[in-house]
Length: 359
Image (cartoon, rainbow, N blue to C red; front, side, top):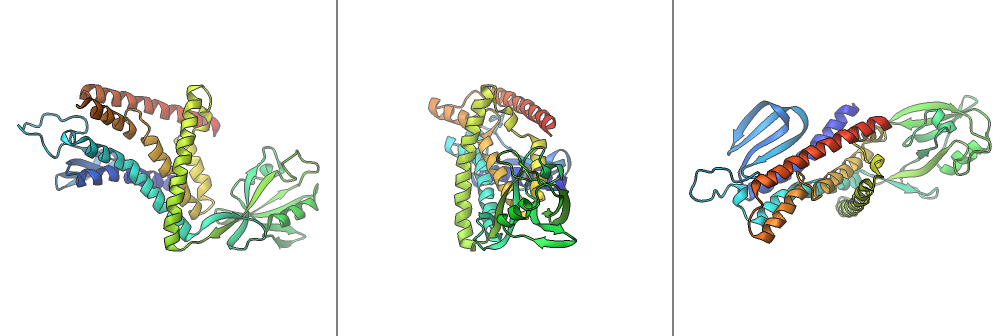
């Protein structure tokens, strides 16, 4: 199931990005030669209004092939082809290239808005009463009784069982009181993970390390706060803008750290993201929606980086074109984008290798 969820999220994020390019190209009367679902080899296709719509073997995203994006080519015409990307004004080309990033941000906005409308997970104190409040484990210390018992971040503590009698809890204070009274004794903790109920035997430590507690867990009281549809739209927009700035800032410091030889371990590749999807999917659909929104913002931020082969790299060449008054030599530009693509693939392989070392 996790593999299916991972693929669905990946497909939605990439297709929304490519659909942005597709739509803006169509609106700008630029010919889209192909809109591909998945990656070749091709399974089948159909053609409508000059565009081939293809369905390919590997369903892990999609692509858009725009006439003239790699150069004007040989049009065989005396006058410039108005449907050719290469002959469009710089501002139209920039709009088409930027549209993928824009649509990823729009998708994040929609997902966050849906999340706020359905009900956003909100941390509250023990006195606050809102819908669906639960005590959630946020951290588990290494080599602690909780870790040894199999507890993990995201687990919801339901209660305890003692003398064949179940004791329900609803506050962090109730958990702490129950555990403190039974330090050194075996207790049975009841918890919820991914909608399923589990139990585990654990012995609270006497005199635990400072800051860890008897079980070795950090907890938060989390409830579901629902908003009206109009408030959800506004909250979703604010969340998208806020996280876009935060993620962009984090990428800046991360890239600076990597160039200095530190920080590489903090970056996740496909395997790392897959593991995060696995953990988040166990926490519920609301958390999964919000995580997909965060990934969409990450995709937008990565693509706007001015590096060859990325949208930001293409925008950089357009900026040079605007300054010098003529396009950058297409052979040079295509070579740069090809080299950039190879370097990105190498980076992806290194990140995947690093993921395997960590997980």
